Image (cartoon, rainbow, N blue to C red; front, side):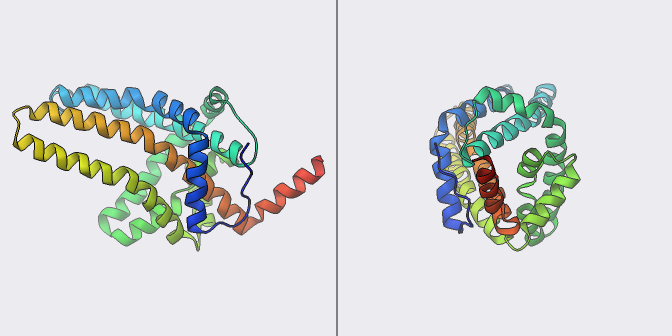
Length: 253
């Protein structure tokens, strides 16, 4: 059982704790990631092989829709799994998935709204977009762990908790995203270089998508772990959540 780390954590400790939980829960997190991402990603690869979105618009839209719905399941189930472990308990993969179902509509709305707000900020002005992304990053964790009734309320909660710590959140997120971005860039460079020397450009493109999809399945669970660890770290810092848990355990003892 993982010993709860209920104290203020530095950026390095947040990352170290996140990687530790990711390693400990690798198998169940990978199962959730595969179950929730395999179909949408497979559809994406098929659409690419069949001529792209222009040739397969219906399948492409179906893939996007399934990615949003299954993504909400993966977010909630992974968050519950990580939270239970972080607080010293345990939860089966099946129970984590079942517990996620009441939150799907709210999570989809939150995901779309956060993406829209942060995306507009990044497109119009890079720095405000980074601030918005960092400030709203823990919205999904706050929503499912506190059973917040709606997207705007979850975003408001995330914005409030993250105040004063957004550079730290952005630093942690950037470190994890590098694990997805840098190998993705390497795959893209290899694909471009190989296609110049090969007539099988379409095959290389599909192969690159498969490699990137596999990478996404491996890295996305780590993002959910990071989100949950940051959520509890901010609650410890701002609301004395560690003292609250200590008082609860003493009462139960």
